[in-house]
Length: 126
Image (cartoon, rainbow, N blue to C red; front, top):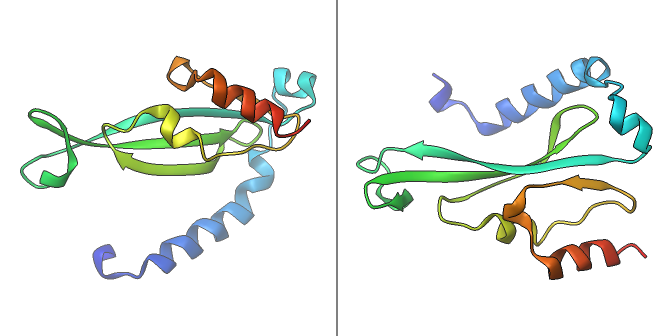
């Protein structure tokens, strides 16, 4: 039944639920409150796919996958950015087009270490 529904239905449902639940999602996170800055968490997850059904999603010799690159707003644990790529896309390549508000703190793992990108990200707001 959901396969026949327009995607707008799910978008409207999401934003309706979000408007109702958002006040309860606001949490006073101890460290974020101390920083008095906007904190974002960026990482990725592999979504395994069956190669016999999704031959376009070749990830490894016998495995298929997509990669979900996401940025979460630490204050409310909601995504502020999400991007689906093929399973082979490097983490940093999904991150390079992003920008963040001045004074923000961005927590990432070593897959995002690109010193030129980090320098440019920091320099945009000075």
